[in-house]
Length: 566
Image (cartoon, rainbow, N blue to C red; front, side, top):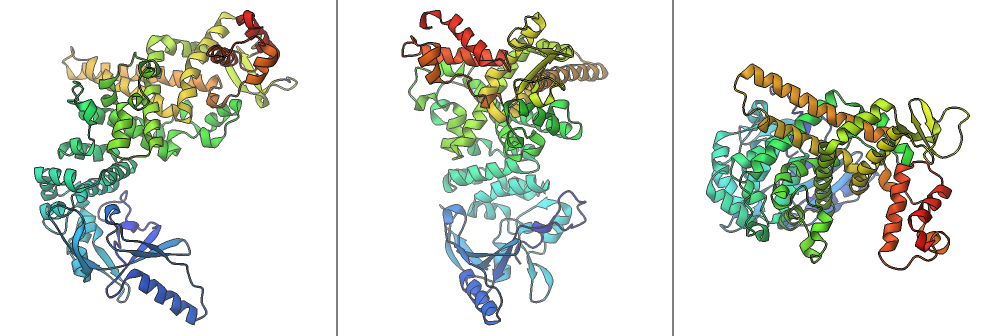
């Protein structure tokens, strides 16, 4: 069994122990035949004995995807078992794809691998672990990532291995052997990485790094090894645009580390707006379930997108001002020119899916929107929401005997009629609801990632700018704690108010009056053109500020707003 210990290794356990976990697949290495041949013979053996056979899939040779030999695979019970022959290989100077490849010995196969911890075998015939390099088990126990052969040779043969080394160090939270660090920082390795490795493979490794247990450590390694500019290529048209990108990766690392640390704190001591039960209750107002109300601690994919957004946010900030509206800025540009630098970097340079790139870009823009709201006084408005007890809840939460809409509004422990309520405090709460809804309708279920990003930008800036004039350590620490606590309190109140006003799922809100009704009976004289969009926007605005309001009152409102078309 190839890579014997790695699938079973628990990196959270002490380094001197090897703990058993459950693997999802097992690699069987063969020393005298191809994987497909062996799988067919195995099925024949099972058939001859009247036992159940298993369908065999074949992953064809595809060097560009790091599949240098075909692999046979079959599912047995809960495991995927891959069969592939041992191999020896030689490389040319201009490619990471082996020029010569043949069936090899176990020792040849072990030494050609990227890392010693990936070179262990379990000999099924003899029931023993075989460490052909003599270093794999020791490196596992010490928590070290190292290469079987001299690291510079290994990395120049296949430069993708430098990224795999970084990824495994982050995944397992291992250190990198000093000789490997020196080789990884060699300019020849950087040049080979740019020349010999496809951008798809680079992007795939970056994605796996950000999925790892230590995305901050992975990005820090890329920066310290001098690889960051090669991995995250600034699009050529942006690089020539006169904008300086100096220091953006270091700033991005700081923001990523702040976001990662804060999310770890939220996991240990979750604020109210990060509790799953409350999220579900808030989402019920707009009919959304668990799939759209998951908190970040339960949503691995949303966290991955947040890590992208945090690390790359300083790059976007160099090319677009927070105060500029993205839609206005790009309105008159050709479609392709409308793409932000983030879409160009992720899609064109790292070959990531467009869906991911757009999600990352949306998180950044929503974070800017939340920052503007908080900095313009909405944090005070949020406190007003909380102190007044303003709530928008699902009708199932209504007191006994109260009937009507599926949405119920309350304030100061009394029922509020959204159609007629004129209390200035309630109106102020609804203005806050409208401002938040505008952002939430664009960002959707990723709103928590955007708020975390906005919050962490303020935390990072607070650490760097507020205390420059202070010099004494204890005073600085106390003042820093006070600033941090204030920022956290503001954002916790802001996010809690969003949930209290039933805004989760507002992106799914359907209009009370559809377009045909507006044209035929509500505003029969409405002309064709942009005015129709204005009418629909007015409807959305009214529904947000009158949650649970009646259709009749909405129609009256639209006729009052547009009397010429009534």
